[in-house]
Length: 85
Image (cartoon, rainbow, N blue to C red; front, side, top):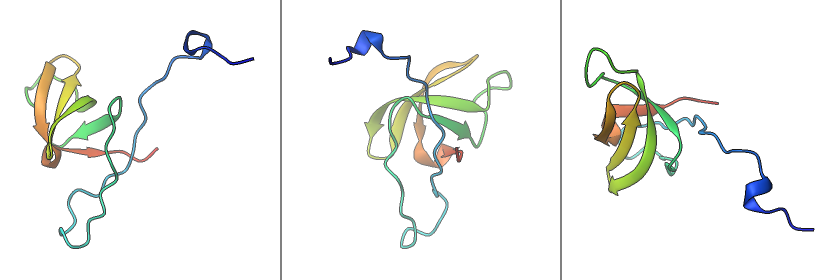
């Protein structure tokens, strides 16, 4: 019997390692996916958290993210890095 989507346990974000600061000829960047938590390299305000949830890709090098105690923002991939699981 097939299991419906409603019967499955909730899905939570995962941490992934992304080598964003390697020279472009050496960097093999894994594909970022929505619902992934990333670490901010610089805080957008002094009160926000240091991590963000990827919501959707905005352009080739930018993502719409949600940051606790800040809200939504558009970040360049150079503004965050991913953590290893």
